[in-house]
Image (cartoon, rainbow, N blue to C red):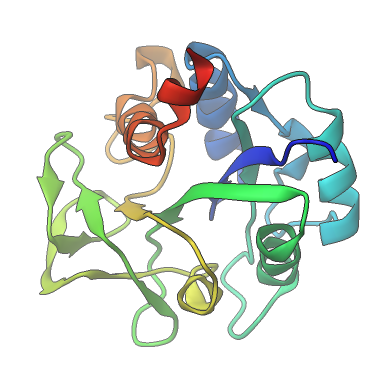
Length: 192
């Protein structure tokens, strides 16, 4: 039996996110499924699994986006399919905040604010800590609570956050989230 592919789920998929995630994937020696970007997501779960299996190496970073639509949109359907697939090992998820309030939210283990600090509080789309602990508001995060994801990190809008996560400066907030997921999952220990 083939070894399961190691995947990080990312709940954002606009052009800023694509550039940031591509950059971070290269920095950590993994791969980004660039065609998974879209606002909203357009690729189905089965199609994404095929692409993940073809990726040259792990970790594989995959983007999902519901484009602000309430309820379970295409991005969440694809995310659930990928996360529950037998050939996929989900190392963690990056739950991205959006301006969707009081509609969809998810529990998070912790967040990283736009200054790169870990916080038990949720953050808004600008990466500014909010008042509630352990949860984040977003448009593609609702289903995360129903999945077996070992670590969920909340961050602001990928590639943005008042330019503090821009790909031209290395997308440091997104990169930190990915590195923490890789470290805590034992990914680096398995490489040795």
